Image (cartoon, rainbow over all chains, first blue to last red; front, side):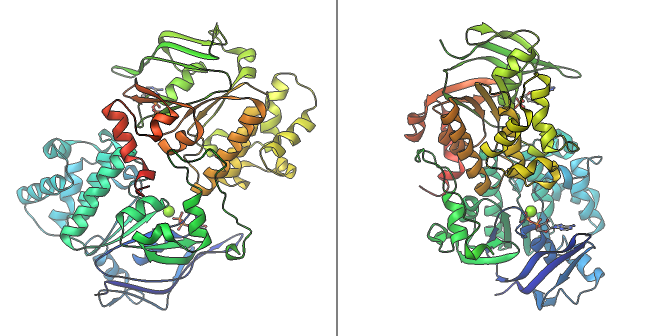
Amino acid sequence: MTLLSVENLHVTFDTEAGVVEAVRGVSFALGRERLGIVGESGSGKTQTGRAVLRLIRPPGRIRADRMVFDGQDLMAAGERDMRALRGRRIAMVMQDPKYSLNPVMRVGHQLMEGLRQRDGLSRRDAHAKAVEALAAVQIRDPARVMEAWPHELSGGMGQRVMIAMMLIPNPDLLIADEPTSALDVTVQAEVLSILDNLVRTRGMGLIFISHDLRLVARFCDRVLVMFKGRIVEELPARNLMQAQHPYTRGLLDCLPRIGGPRTPLPALDRTADWAR
Amino acid sequence: MALIEIDDLSVTFAARHREVQAVRNVSLAVDARESFGLVGESGSGKSTILRAICGLAPISGGTIRIAGQPVPTRRGPGFSRRVQMVFQDPYASLHPRHTIDRTLSEPLAIHGLPDTDARVVRALTDVGLPPAFRFRFPHQLSGGQRQRVAIARALMLEPEILLLDEPTSALDASVQAETLNLLNRLRAERGLTFLMVSHDLAVIDHMCDRILVMQHGAAVEELPREALAKAQMKTDYARSLFAASADRLLGA
Ligand SMILES: Nc1ncnc2c1ncn2[C@@H]1O[C@H](COP(=O)(O)OP(=O)(O)O)[C@@H](O)[C@H]1O
Ligand SMILES: Nc1ncnc2c1ncn2[C@@H]1O[C@H](COP(=O)(O)OP(=O)(O)O)[C@@H](O)[C@H]1O
Ligand SMILES: [Mg+2]
Ligand SMILES: [Mg+2]
């Protein structure tokens, strides 16, 4: 069943230097599955994710033939409808928890805020649910973390707290924008397996945005490869290593590998026809 | 005798309420023309070791020798002609209001070296940038181009030793590949010695002959490149880094 369908999405910015076309005609559909979006920086991944939530601020503009989430027309929805969707049904986790958590509010307070205001839970119930959410992202000492300030958390802990916060309302779709890029590899692997497990057990849809093809291949069902605002290739994640498009191949081949040859790494040919 | 010798180095920062021992009794030796890598999770003390070599971190114990001579307390011009550092973030390490020309010619002026114009043009050409880039400002360059400028600047004084602190971590994979190729070419052409930091084991493996794994400020395990490729590490920590390394995710 289709949860989200996007047809011919454009995101443009009117700047002094002219019009920047950040997203140029992107189309995809998503069920309750894990969809990866990969590409180099500037390829339009973040703007695509934000456009789904209509979080593009002026001078940015969104245009699409169709953008429908669970039967609801996102292009026609008013700002009020969008606010009701954001967080509750479609959640977004950003790259750096430092910028997403409120620095002057204790973690527990931030987790409970939505539960109390949006869901009208009592203090005690909200507390219990928040602790439960922290436990779900495998935070060993939730009571202590509830009392912590954001700056007291390590990167990995901060990102788990963010994921816990996003998952409390039980959204149908989670958009994770480079959720582990700021983390160490060992921590990265842990956070990803937590995310993966949650998506499976709750039957959510996931849009996983990353510049790292290897991560996406590992954690997604399907992959969109973006270049200069366009999707150049779409393929099942398990076939990523057999990708055909020269851009996808180039991104894979230019990575050094443990035990690989010492010869120069193959560079991406940006003068080829596909790159125009 | 190794070109860089670090014996029992400790670095202690006096933070507000407590002391942070960022480096604990680390020893390593890098031969001339060798490429030596430091890996470990963030906060493990890798950058602090490079900074200590340059006199930018408070050494609380141990010694650092370059070509057999203990580094002078004030590093001075003689040191910077032998040893140069390249930082992770090419956005932060170049002065935003200086042209590339000024950035590259400044070290020459400080050291009273002649032929500024010719040297700047050659430096740009060596790192694969058109000479016309002299007149640009950092914000008019891409991340990869800026890192090339940072490398060109480090090479202006023709040092023997480059200290590289995550030189490609802020770059896209394709730009990383170009930058690593550039560094390897320059090392071969000029007989440079590298001491390189990265959190990416595959990058270190591609670039380095020997590797020191660090954790919590201490040396965990040193291993030659061949041992890494064969997964012959002795400690659990080194093995866990290897297992989590992104390029393992593809299942070889
Ligand atoms: N406010 C803005 N004004 C102009 N251009 C922008 C703005 N925000 C983003 N862009 C441009 O949109 C393009 C896509 O950006 P983004 O989606 O963030 O890329 P990615 O997430 O793939 O790195 C980039 O070229 C970027 O420069
Ligand atoms: N100027 C400083 N003052 C206090 N603590 C510092 C300072 N610089 C680094 N540290 C601490 O030293 C430790 C090692 O840091 P660093 O060498 O930057 O690690 P790495 O490069 O391996 O990520 C960290 O705990 C860090 O917080
Ligand atoms: Mg982005
Ligand atoms: Mg560092």
